[in-house]
Length: 108
Length: 126
Image (cartoon, rainbow over the protein chains, first blue to last red):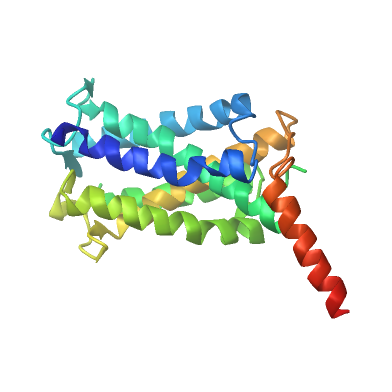
């Protein structure tokens, strides 16, 4: 179970934000193609940053508290999922604020 | 390069994408700054667990050493860069016409109910 520690944190993030889809009808998951094309470049940029940081020794991951699935360069699967979950949560939160405040964001 | 320098460059890069490359100019908009404190709160919480439980461990030589809820202060910059890049791309895609609709809140009974209540109160005040 301890290996799931990082994934549990990610699940917590997702649960904290995902209810906005059915309750406030933020329609982010419904616009999944736009969401996919948003997440993709973010994952690429931050995976590259992470690989550089791992190579430079800026940070390390506890093998006891991560899944143990590693990509080349020593990048844990957990960390890659972080770069998917956080952008999805950010867009959910952003669109929720827009739904409530109805202020322009530049794509109207 | 230290994490401190990388994080500052990350913020500069995200600002460049928002202001110059995609011209979404989110950092000039109220809606972005209304969202960001909410996201930061959740970031401090989740990042605090990741660093507090030592799931992710930082090399003391790579960071300046200031910490906020266990996490190095550089993580705030890292998070800001990631959130700004994400939202800039999201808004840019919408501006280009990709799935601009259904807009947020469309079809929400809760929001409609809230607006009706606020509307009634507003009209009673005037």
